[in-house]
Length: 286
Image (tube, rainbow, N blue to C red; front, side, top):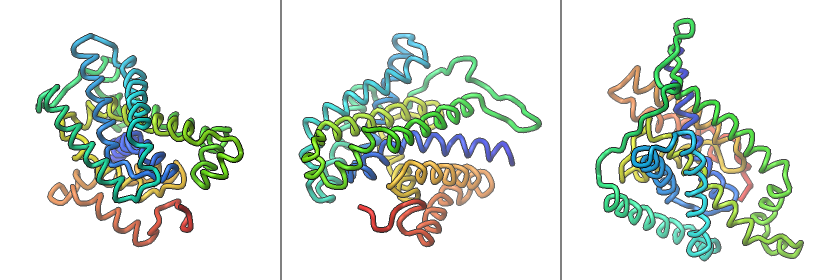
């Protein structure tokens, strides 16, 4: 039981790392980026190529994946995304879905359709037996990284000048510009960070989730569920939602494997019936 709980928490933490970038772009920038999974897939493929073809350490691959995908996100934001900030949400959805299918076609062309694998460092492989509880070393690593990431993001968004500028830019861009805030630069940097976080999640999720060209489609619904259940007004909501959904998903697939894949959707429906705006959303918020 405790082993399942631990694995569920680790899975939930991984979902949060993958989805927190979408929380930033959707919740703080009010932009529906369904191509978020494509950025995560890019981080996974960067890790696979660096490790399997060039022998780069897994630990170095994580910051490289973050920075490379963040840079790609910055370029795409300047060239494409910024033109759609003021467009209707339907336009944003159609645009980002188009990017998803373009990324899938590109992955098939350059990497093939087979499942990609990586070999984790020896110290992250296997399990520890702690008073009868099987603790996976890599899952513990994911939990530690996620906790540090959550604390860092919460601090940046609530306690720094940049976080204040971002909230001001989202609430009223014209007033923010009048106060001397470079709204365009703030949005570009925010989008780059959100993309980089997706790349980091993709790099860390390759060993657990698997990686193939259909990754953006397979996990798109999971990202959306985390953000929807948790709400988009803070990092805390999606973090707790990811934990809840991760534990429910792992426990459901273990105890009721016949319907385990549907448990996460049942939890989503139950939460949204009680809290239609998400666990921590401001009901009158944007």
